[in-house]
Every structure is written in structure tokens, then in C-alpha cells.
Length: 482
Image (cartoon, rainbow, N blue to C red; front, side):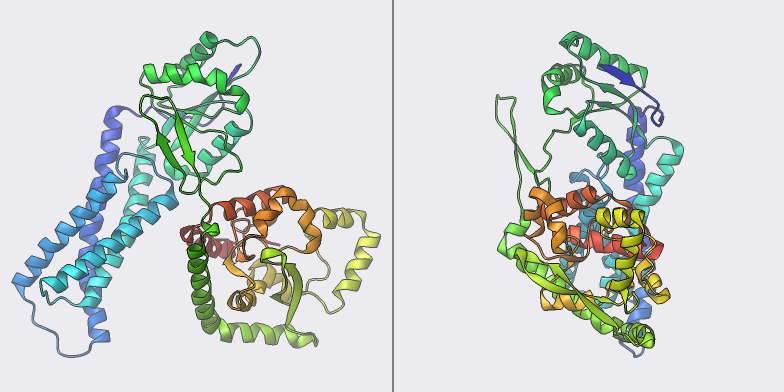
């Protein structure tokens, strides 16, 4: 057993600070709703004049007052629902919080529209839609701003003690560090282990570390071998009324929509997982999303793609090339890309691999070269910005690929997936994916495989939207690309 420190430091979060945090979050949402109403009033008036030209309608003061009261009721209902979801007293991961806000605002907007029709209110539908769009935008901005303010004041950070060792504890620390939005700051850890450790010394070490580091929260993340030692720790934390969480060792299990069931009078929790992509309806939903978005993007980007094709063809070669890749259900298809290499690329690669041992080792390890001599100047730009993959929108419309999915691989790579190849074959390869937004070429191959498997096991339409939004940032910053 050992106690480690050297992590980031954070001041203790008192009960008063937690009340202040909740109060400011509620106040921020309320002010965001007021600001959204005011801004949408001006913006909605301008859009109505643009879309519905004609003489401006006279302003009915009584109607405006009724609208304000009506809006206040729906905003109160919206905030009450967010409170029930724990938005003002719990720490929720950013993308989960964003999804819940957008869904709640969309539902409030729809109900508001129905009520306007039922009560025969005469407000513009353009203004109504603008109003709730502004509510969503301003709420997200308010959350970010309030949490940034609380972080600057030092009241949002929650000093956290990590208890555990091995892969589960490392995964827990990485997960907490990746979600800075949550505010959990690991200030120390207690590593469990050693044959000499007994229940009394283990619980004493955890409690002493909790007080010594000024922790306000404990994360218990045991590997299977540590479970006997963590049981008395959990019992002691419960007796002392310490806030804590348990991260179980469930590697390989789907965590999306994981349901927990407790049993009356038993210290037992049953975790039930699910696989959305195994449901036919979910597959249909994903396919409809792919076709709709890919078709729209092809229409919008057609002039740009034709211009890129003209630049590539200046050396006399084709603009596109199709590389044979492995598809869903072990099929094969031609994965389209803009040509980024010289015409005699295969011959150049053969010579490089024959004469450069370091390049050969890199190729055998990653199936790509960081300093690839075959890439043209135009091709280098396309690769750095990932624009070379735009023709894969055609693959998406054809049904060979998806907008989001595992990274398309060649047959030689299948053996490197090991048992996880079954997850790859369950889904269409993606134009983008979890790997592309998680460091991309800076990630090791084993990490790529795990990310592809995690995506398939935990698929949801919201995850696809999240990855697409993250892809925009990655493309603009050229993160991890070469």
C-alpha cells in the first residue's frame, strides 16, 4: 500500500461554496433566458420583415405582456426539469449536459408552439423559433461562463482522492482529467496492495489521506484483485458520510445507457448494458441520418470539390482514386479519396522501403509514413486538413460507409484487431470517427482499435453528432494530422 501526491492542488469545497455554485448556476440560466428573450425580439422582428415583407404590425401591449408571462412559465418549467436532471447540484460531463439542455429546450419550444396555437396567440412563428434557438445558445454560453467564473474563484474545483491501483485506477484518472468541465481535481491517491495490508490499515490509510490532502470527494476504482480490500473502505466512507463514487472494472462492457438496479434489503447492484447498433430501428435511424446529411453536403460542397479536382489533375493523373477497404459484414469496397500522391506512388514506396530501414519499420507498424515522399504539395495540404476524404461522402450515399464509424482498414490490418475485429465488422466504416477526434495519428495502433470497439459498443445518434462537431475543430486546428 502506498500514498501518492504531486497532483494538481485545489482548495476545499465547503457547503457554503456548493450552495453558492448552485445559486450562480440557477441565476446564470435565468439571466440567459431573459437575454434570449430580448435578443430574439430584435432578431425575430428583423427575420420576420425579411421573410414576410409588408407593413409592420402594430404592437399590442396586452399581447406582449401575456407573451412574457407565457414565456416565463415555460422557462420556469424548463429550469425545473433541468434541476430534476441534476444540473444545479451535480457535476455532469459536458456532452451529456449539452444533450440534455438541447433536448429540454426543443421540448419546451414545441410545447410553447402548441400552446400558442391552442390559445390562439398571434405571435410570429419565426420569432417563436428564434426565441427558443437563442435560449439554447444562451444557456450553453451561460453554463460555460458561470463555471469559468467559479473556477477562477476557486469554488468549482472539487479536491478528489483516488483509491485503487492498476488499469481501473489509471482509466479513472484519465477520464477525470479529460473532463475538466466536471471540476474534479485529483489531489492524491492511495494505492492498494501488498500482502501485509489488512482491513484496519487500509481504511486508516484512506481516511488519513482524505484529511491530509483536504479532499471533499473520493473515487474508488479497484481492479478485481483489490475488491476485498475496498469493501471495508467503502463501508468506512459510508459510515463517515463522505461523498464518494465507485468506478467498477467493467472493461469491454457497453457503458452507454448502462442501467443499475438495486434489490431491497441486499447490498447488490445489477448493471445492465445494451448495444444500440444491434437494434434494427437504430440502424435505420443512423442510415437516414447518413443519407440526409451526406446528400446535403455533396450539394453544398460540389463547386469546391470540382475546384480541388481541377488542381489535382494538373499533373495528368486522375483526381480520385479508390482504395480497397474492408466494410461491414466483411465486405470489400473502393474507399474514395482525392489523389494526394504522385502518379508512380507504388514504385516510389517500394524503393523507399527497400533502402530505408526506419521507414520500413514505421510502415510495418502504422501502415503510413510521417514524411512520405509520394505526397504532392496539393496533397499535403489536403491531408493536413483532411479534405482528401471529402469524396467519401459518395461512399456514404452508396451505403458503403457512414458519416461516423470505425476507421476504414485494409485486409492486412484485420489481424491487428484481434478479437475486437467483430466490433469493426458490425458497423460501416466512417468518414470520421472517434479515433480521428482523439489524437488521430498521434495515437498508437492499439489505442485506435480500442476506440473503434468503444464506438460500436456505445453507439448513439448523439455520439455521432458529438464526433461530427469535434471533427470540425480537429480539421480547423489540423490536430494529429500528417
